Image 1: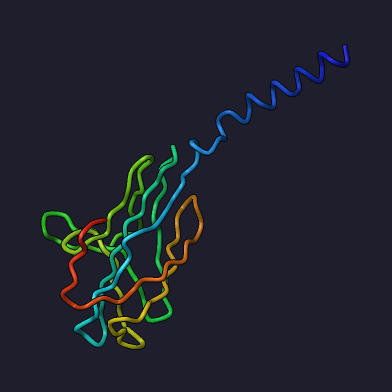
Image 2 (image 1 turned 30 degrees about the vertical axis):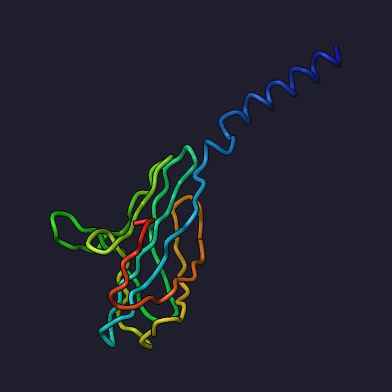
Length: 147
């Protein structure tokens, strides 16, 4: 009887965990991060690719940096607007790229120069905070891949 109760408890626990496996959660990774060297003393843009290998969608909800204020923008039909969040689909990616969705740095405390890195904290609804070192590239830099 004791053995049956233990087996039942173990099976119940295993079944309960089945929905909590790694595929059931967001599994984020960040790549292709960069900032073109700003031409303005007060504004800059940032780009990054966020991949989600997990089975649950997440959202990029905010971004902070020590060099200034950062807002998240989406671009629809060539019109840019600030948004509160951008989705990171399950088994998909969110691409922030020139001419599309992007990060906007405003009220810069300093103007980053090519060769430097800018630290940003990406905040997600489910996955918490991810710190990214964003290299500053030439103002005319165009990535070969990842965007």
